Length: 60
Image 1: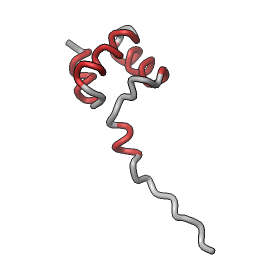
Image 2: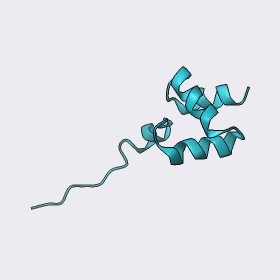
Image 3: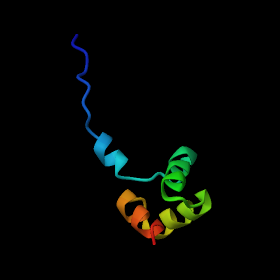
Image 4: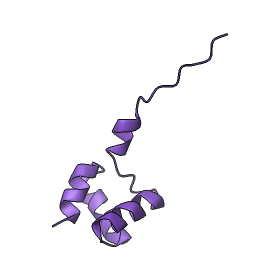
């Protein structure tokens, strides 16, 4: 029986999102943008979990 081939499928699209419920992702974005974790969660709730949109909103 052949083993399943491992692919990178899904990794890029996963990095394009911010998981608001994952503390380590929220901390990472907070440290990256110089904002508080609470403000990151608030922005994710407001604009969705697209990393590009979240970072754009936080940099204002």
